[in-house]
Image (cartoon, rainbow, N blue to C red; front, side):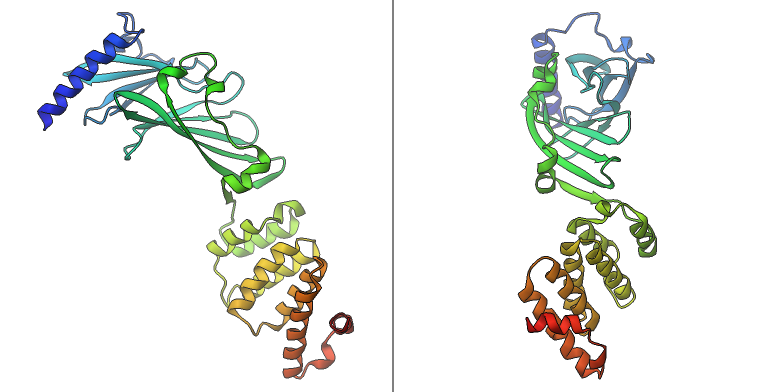
Length: 313
């Protein structure tokens, strides 16, 4: 089996060498090794168990990408393409081996300015060719919400031979537009190490940054709702409702009431949130449960008159 693999790879090398327009004597591995203008990585790019060479122009040094196959102690040039460096945009960060079922390495780029914009290009080997299979975009904005980042996977399936031109940028699929990302991308939120630290920032931060139901899905995922965190989550929901983030408030309060149905004040809070959203029927149901539990506790005199009036409307 190993002998067959070696024969196959030897034939593959010959085919690639003679079919590649750039197979010239001046493109040798020695031109790149120990050259500070190039980044050199040892990666098995054709899945034969032997480390080959992937070579890229260094940061701010160009956009060239070269592939060399290793066979019997020699490196043979097989492909010239681009490293996805953009003029005035993202620059090369690193090239990393990726031994999964579909891909052999990734090319990572980043935007060297304010904000965060990273792109990972996944390269596969199939049918004696190398393909850009997909791109993974990671982005956030310090201007809008520095705590929220998107991870967007975009399918490509493009032969690297087709991307060795000046118009490669127009040939690939790009990150979804901003107004589509909430639906098309995964969302990550920055979270502190403790719920108390989150509360401290929460109370002092821009009100727009505390919005988004997915933020609280992630928060409960990291800091589960329990008797220890119950009061804190109730306080967050109350604050959200008072700042107009009623949908976010309702999400937390529904979680609280599902697990702790005797949390009386939560019915009051969720009733206010529904009332502000114009859903008076759900508000009245919540208020009625609050009133019932308050009476059962002998605290009828502490029920706000405005609340009773709303139920009676």
